[in-house]
Image 1 (cartoon, rainbow, N blue to C red):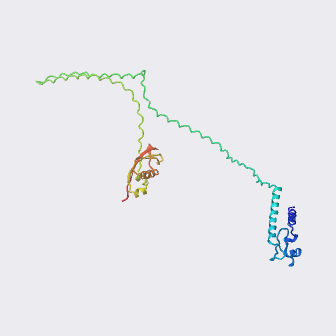
Image 2 (cartoon, rainbow, N blue to C red):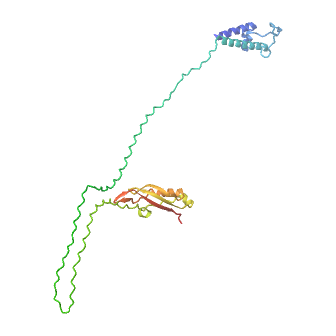
Amino acid sequence: MQHSNIHEIFERTLIALQLPEGALMNDAVIMKAVPGPSPDITPTAWRGIPFTANTSRPGGLNKPQVMVLIAASVLIHGVIWWTMQTAQPAVPEVAPQVPEMTIELTSPTPPAPEPPPPEPPPPPPPPPPPEPEQPVEDPDAVEPPPKPIEKPKVEKPKPVKKVEPVKKPTPPAPTPAAAPSPPAPPTPAPAPAAPAAPPAPAKESAAVSGLASLGNPPPEYPGLALRRSWEGRVILRIKVLPNGRAGSVEVTKSSGKPALDDAAVEAVRNWKFIPAKRGDTPIEGFATQTIDFKLPE
């Protein structure tokens, strides 16, 4: 439809310009359709446009005619473009609407925290040691009767036989009778028996420690102390368990160098001891260990 309109407008333009229909054809067609002017006829003006003979291309259009055709072509194309713009309004391109997508990220519901286990009840305090029973004096108790006092027997003096006197002998003096001994003092009543003393506890043997007794290895000399020529003495208080292991190790006197103290504590924790004993039963005890760090000569 548009091509037919363009062709119709082009034909009307050619008619208005009084141009032959074969003006735009090739040279052969132009020469046949529109013969050139004869050399005997002088060209005349054609409707106000001077005629100029085309010497370069016989039978073709001269320069003013070509310019007119170009202007007409531009005008035609402008009219066509304007007609198309007014006839069919441009429809604005609408971008396809992308449906909105909402993504909800829901984290899984955390499990309810388990209730903490109930704390075990504290162990009951150990019962206090029983106090030794003291004897109670009973005022109504019957005291044992005192023993009867034995009277000493008084020996009667034996009769002295009369001796016939001898001539001028000195008669022996009569033997005096033995004086009676004074009566013995009464024996005091026996005192009530004293309460039995509680049995003495078995003597506890002290915890035996040392490097020589059990062959415990000495602590390693720290490398930092060797490089800096540190020496010192560390005194440790060790809690010895019934199984002979060190339960806790405390520094009672530091060497002044933390590296030496730490080396001594780490070594003693791996030592074995002979635990204290109550009778034949091992018990907990405490031991004191002195460790000297001296640089090798």
